[in-house]
Each structure stands twice: as C-alpha cells, then as structure tokens.
Length: 215
Image (tube, rainbow, N blue to C red):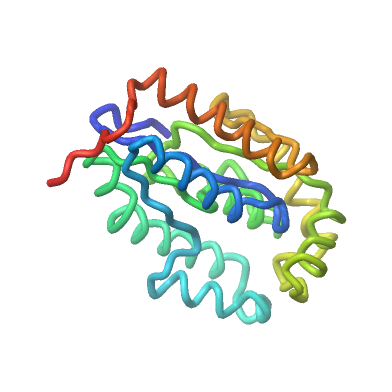
C-alpha cells in the first residue's frame, strides 16, 4: 500500500483494542491541534454511512453474518469513507484523525480467522496513514474500562478471549509508522506522548498551522 504523494494533508489513525482510550485521546488531540491553528477532521470507522450503521447494528448480533460477509461490510464502509471523507480532506490540506482504520479490520477479522495479509491487500485502495497511534492496554484492562468507566456491557467484538487474539495481531504489525503507546499510564502522560509524536510529524511535513486550503 502506497501513500498518495500528491495529497496535501496528514492522515493519523488511532488504533488499539476496545477500552484502550482511542476515542478520548483523539478528541483531546483534535482540540490541541486546532489551538495550534490546524484544520482538523475527526472521523471514525465504522463510519456514519449506510454500511457503517449496519456494522454497528451487528455489535451484539455478530453471528448473523459469516466472517466473509462481515469483512465485505467493513470494506464497503471504508470505500465510502475514503471517497466521501478522507480523500477530500487530505486534498485540501487538512489533518484527518480517524478512530480506527484498516489495521482494526486486519486485527479483528484476523482474530476471527481471516487471513491478515489478504485483508491488507484488499485495503490497497485506502490511503496509507502518515502515523498510526497504537494505544496498548492488556485485554483484561480494556474489558474493565468498558464495564466500569463506560458502564457498558462488552459487545460481541469486546469479549476478553477475542481481545487477546486482537491484541496479539496488533502487536505483530511491522509498519514503521505505527507508534506504540502504553495507555495504562496516566491520561495526561499518554496525551503528552501523543502530542509529541504528532508535533514531530507536523514539523517534518512543514505543518505550522492554518495549513488547509479550501476548495
């Protein structure tokens, strides 16, 4: 998978097992970047599109689809997400922060028995991220946070035996732009590390604030 050398923006993906703190840290980073004058798009997968809504409806009914049908839904949702959100934002020089991307598909559907290399190949249409922030917590801690902090019952994707497999797959991904962060640390310390990594990327790429161009 190759990055589009013509794009003007940055694509940063937050990844990790459920309960790792992705969504919270994405919001904190978005606020920080906007304070620096950057144009930021916050998005997520599954998306809010028709395929994404169907995926979320299966969170507690995962057995209604075969693993092949489930993977196809994720691919269809990502195609829409890339076309309608990610690519337009990158083309106008914005910083795109996505809560999950194709690494989650590889990890979660891989844990369900699908071939990880094949999943990555099937996502070749998706822009390669400039940075992946992989927040790491032990699976049992992720489940505890879901129950105690979010006060939710773990859904079909969030069972501990499933998350153990997912965590191992995330740990195996060799991509150089994946930066692993211990998300069991204090929230402020985790966010500071995230900001350091993103600020370094912005410096390297020459992003100094007010970087987007409106079409």
